[in-house]
Amino acid sequence: MGQKVNPHLLRLGTVFNWNSRWFDERRYKETVLEDYTLRKVLLEKLRAAGVARVEIERSINSIKVIAYVSRPGLVIGRAGTGLEELKKFINAFFVAQRGKQAPKVDIRIEPVKEPNLDAYLVAKSVAEQLLRRLPYKRVLNQTAEKVMSSGAFGVRIALAGRIGGSEIGRRERIQKGTVPLSTIRENISYASSPALTKKGYVGVKVWINRPVGKE
Image 1 (cartoon, rainbow, N blue to C red):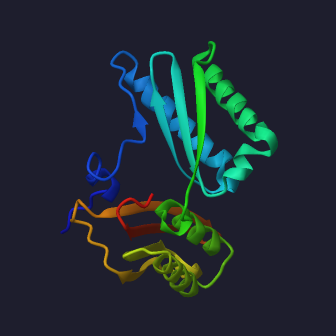
Image 2: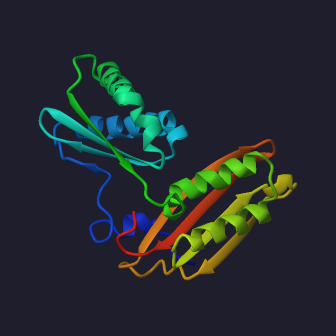
């Protein structure tokens, strides 16, 4: 039986960097939970802007939040009004979490140059199409073609659950190109996203073998 290892975790330090960059021995548990909650609420709040990931850097008295989105204009807003609202939202989050004044917050919005090469955005797109009850085979084929035409070396998309409303859960998978999961130097983008259909959850997993340097 094969050992299942998260492709992103396997390549930390060689291909990918950590999404949270800090160390605090005294408040380690609280800080990890704070990062997890902040990332969760930001992914939900910025969903319309196509958020791919949120990175958090901490220093002694300040916190830098870097959000990678496919539509940065929706976040920044006209004359930066959206960015100010986001900063107030994050400050209110820290006040609610800590019960005291929020630290200095620095926000950066970075564009995702090619959304079709980001596994999280692709998985979310597949999940949303399944929620609209589109035929899963057409969704898989069209999504794989888009990813390959964007310059990927390979893509694998796997579904599991009551696909298409079937009575018995099953697995479906499509792969185009090569996706070498055991080669550490390969830039493999991986993400999973559940789709809550009327018949139950359908799990969506996406692996994308991208050219090195593509984020």
